[in-house]
Length: 228
Image 1 (tube, rainbow, N blue to C red):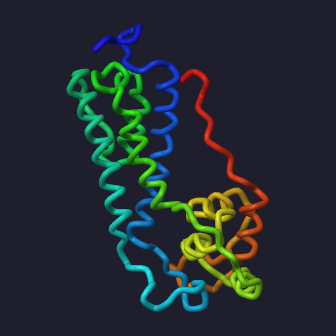
Image 2: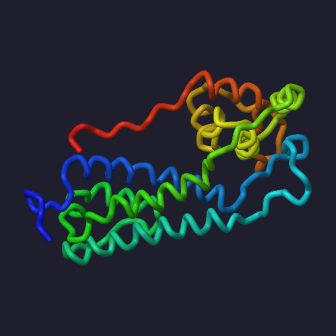
């Protein structure tokens, strides 16, 4: 197999794309953990589901999310191991999926000098896209009854409950995940409703306000530094 100039198996464009892909993984791994454990405790007055029969209630464990998380982890393990073996270096980082993604990003040149790395972008992209489908599955067009939408907007839900509801509101709200709710909160765009709540009870938000702020402040795409 012939090498690229400088003994790299990936060119500059491929390296930049791979770096961007690796930087998506830590947040994606967190979202998969939430999806895997179905963390949807919404409270007595906040458990709102539209058009859902009792047989459709979510399980406390999501096997598809667990499988996607395991595959993502396994692929990163294989590339970390190959880099360490071929470059003669030790892996001092965290054994978590996020930790390995960050390590590969920091050691991108060592990865690019590893024989066989030409397969890495496609392989990592495959498991990332599979995980993204679990976290934010494509949704079919949904026609909402205006009275149901009004009732939904008036509800009080925690971040997980809002993310669950958003999946039923169509493409416009497909990216309204738990992390997105937390981002809006951290940016001061939304605020939790005043309690009193139990000490371990999740914060509650007014659904309509969260929906409005999600649309009013679209999330920005991640940017890759130019020197990568």
